[in-house]
Length: 496
Length: 118
Image 1 (spheres, rainbow over the protein chains, first blue to last red):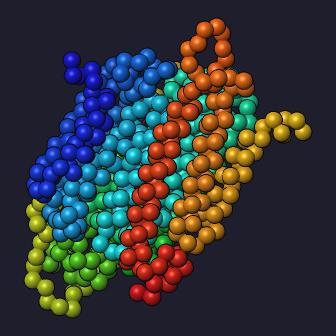
Image 2: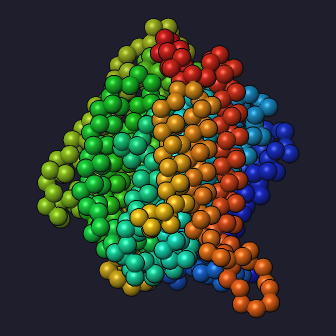
Image 3: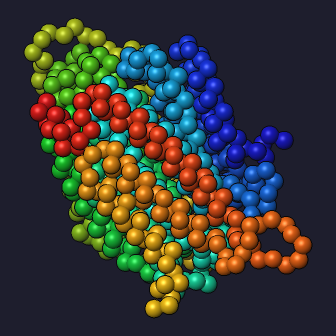
């Protein structure tokens, strides 16, 4: 019965494929193996989402050791939804990886690249699937260590310092999480999240619990690049190979947001988390600061990858803002924007991979006249940018709409204004690109040379997903609403 | 006062953690930063090890009679964290070697100046 092993299979498949990559030399074989592993994980994630939707929680005990003692994988709608985001972004990005990697990374590093990529995927899927707090730390380090290696593969030597900076900050964040988990274990003697959730109310008055919560919150926020702990992100996204930027922008921070949600709502419980700290105010303040500061920074960038990296920090602000409302519509907006932001940023960074492939760099001077020389690539950038702004008929509109509704529900009209102002700022930096691409001609007369189809097709798959899921929202909204209700249902007391 | 002394292992943990953290922040030399990071991580290992220790407890081996033994689980957990720490250090050292090759220096200040002058 293979279907009963699905929860662990999607983590194990990329884990097995990763070392196999080191045995292969041919680019096409490496690519086929990685793509197959990622595709299989995506199909499993899809099946799990169906199963979790119909039968509720799927519990899988590793090695048959019963739950509070052994490691349990616990899949509910929220997990399955995040798993689907991670695996689908990873699979589509891998479609384009072969061509882009062959150009950007020296040949002797190809096996290492695919191996690290799959390990990173393993880590991200493991964090999402597991129901064990210490397991989260282990998988977090697997994904982090491999992403440091991936970033350092960039051509620019600044990739090395960016990777180093991320390593130092990421390790501090992970160690904070480790301290938090240790303190939880001291209090309760258990590491299983579900078990923790039942035992923590008994020690709710303890100062140790408060410090555990604080350590976990700061540690996860570092991984999530929550303003002002985002300093590692712009450099890491800018100097890493373009495929890696697209992959990390679509997945790594999203999984960190998931971990935050899991700890706040499932382990500590919203009642505790929002009463012991002024969490609503903290989250809203940081989110607003992220939206304003990062959007304004994005406007002044001359490197387009850096521009979109800052815009990622701003978009994470929107995601965090939704948590602060502590309402079903707020959380739905958060979860929707997790998916939608992953789609748009992956699409944009993939389009930049096309630009980089032809132009060799992604400075503003490189996009001059791009509307004529690379019309399809540039069109993808424009559509992705519009989605970022939140124009109707794109996914960006859907999540902003839910966020505004959540803000109006609670009478936060200042926040509504800030959300809309943030969109205006996004319009400014997207317009700067449009202007360069369509209304300026490059000095030299370039012939029309579009990016190769193997890069263009995956990019457009993501762009079309941006539009399709902006019109037919039943898949994303259905899952997001169900997961939001589940999270808040737990907050109301009792377990599902 | 006596609780203060009884909990000395936790004070050592906090002291080491802060020392390590301070080194990471204050030092400009990339290798020294990693050393600070190691002290920081080692402090957390001590936290885990001391939380598992039972006073007067032995190693968790089945013996005749009722013996109290230390909780082995935190010790096992921290073995994993030690491995992670070693891997992090190795990766950081490899990065530093490549930074040295690319920039000719491992001082943060010099690297910033070289990047800024581009």
